[in-house]
Amino acid sequence: MHVIDYVIFVIYMLAMLGVGLYFFKKNKTSEDFYVSGRSMSSWHIGLSVVATDVGGGFSIGLGGLGFTMGLSGSWMLFTGLIGAWLSAVFLIPTISKLGHQHKFFTFPQIFNHFYNSKVAFLAGIISAIGYIGFTSSQVLAGAKLASATIDGLNIQTALIVMGVIAVAYTSIGGLKAVIYTDTIQWLVLISGLVFIGIPVAYNAVGGYEAIKASLPASYLSLTNVSGYQILNWAITIIPIWFVGMTLYQRIYASKNEKEAKKAWFIAGLFEWPIMAFMGVILGMLAKVAANQGLFTGIADANSMDSEMGLPILLSTILPVGLLGLMLSSYFSAILSTADSCLMAASGNIVTDIMSKLSKKEMSHAKSLQLSQIVTLSVGVFSILIASQMQNVLELMLYSYAFMVSGLFVPVLGALFWKKSHPTAAFWSMLLGGSTTIILILTKNNLSLSHSLTDKLDANIYGISISLLAFILLSLYHNKKEETTWNLK
Image (tube, helix red, strand yellow):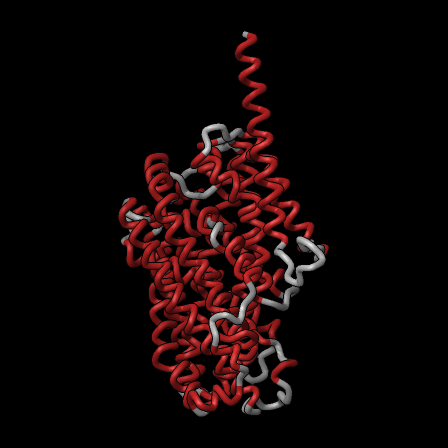
């Protein structure tokens, strides 16, 4: 990188820290810190949602999918569009009303409302663990990008640099700083992709004819993906729109139900097709450049880390100045997700775990200070986790899967099934989440039969166990209570 690129990059990062400092002076209560005073408009919320959901991990991860499978990788974010619109129709009307009526800050508080404090406590633990892992994936994405584009910067040092920046402005600024920086970061990213990344990369590899000559025909097809892969993406990504703490915080932060629903429709459209195709197209162009031998020191494109293709492409083809702008774009995406996930994990720990353990009322000032300290601590821990991982998309999907398998069924039960029982919710969460994490750790993903070559994600088994436990235990306890009542 040239000194001009460094200057552009540093100015951008300082601007983000400046936003955090500005809102640090504005925040007076935990409500300001965690839900932006419940006053945000649909466009700010919508852009923040898509920046958070797509963000750096999916930007780098989509580049990796484009590198390995081409345009068909875009179907992953099509499941995001479906999830956004389904939750807008079925989730937001209830959650927006409850959030404003009861002044909720977090997702597990919904469980306390529908079930009991024991269920909410477990939900807080599951959500916090999931979002710590998700924060780690974003820091890792930033480190990969930085280490591939900045000469002499190793990935461990990059992890520290990225982590410090994300943690600093999130810890001091709260959700309002996160939402406003998300809006800025997403606009920077989309501008960088449209006006810099894609056109420059397209010309650098020689245009459409060169792309056709360099890649298999399957890369330019939308059918280069198995039904099982789409099912795995769908079963992991669609439910997150019903259990994502970052999303609940934004529902609470919206002015009203109408603004929240509009924000979700906006977010869905930006996820697919806009961000989905931009991400995989850049990944494809990186594969073309690698096949053409444009990457110094890389002789075989198939042997390199697919998620490094996009960062190396940018550092190879972009001239002085434009590289700094494009890097700022991608770091924008990474930070926009890292900050939101950090806020989610912090909110779970302070509101759903620590407050339940201490049972002491705190002043607004003390609560705000504790929130900032916990956010800082979670950020440091996330950096440590990221230093032990290698694959961004894998870490993200593992974190998603763990939360979804434990939380999705009890949420649906609370909203749509009158026979739902607190004991059933507790055990379905515990069994579903445990099943998924055990299968992930042991890599023992079972297949439906020996004739099937595609394997289902551990998450599918976790949700199935969760659903079975929830239904059976709800019916059992309802029948037991009905019998007891009749005897009286």
